[in-house]
Amino acid sequence: MRKKREILRRSRRNSFLLISLAVLSLCCVLVYKTVTLDKSASQYQATIDKYEDDVKDLEKEKSEIADYEEYKKSEQYIEDTAREKLGLIYDDEVIFQQSNE
Image (cartoon, rainbow, N blue to C red; front, side, top):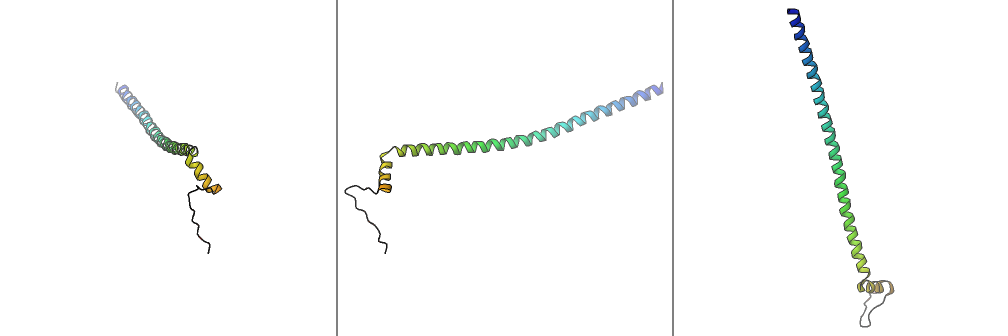
């Protein structure tokens, strides 16, 4: 009778230790995976932030291009181009030039 109790007690203790070891192993794996996923999430967030900055820059560039396109359609653009490239002036304008001396 005593031997049976002793065997049963050892068996329970071994089962408890085995189950405790299994639970501890699962906890370690979960902690490791959590840390790994947090690192991946932070890397992905950094990538998302970079792409959002790129989108903002492209939207700004798109706005500048649209403004330049509107400027090219204006009378001011035609006048500026005629002055710079063709040297044209209005009849009542006087141009002063520096001497090269």
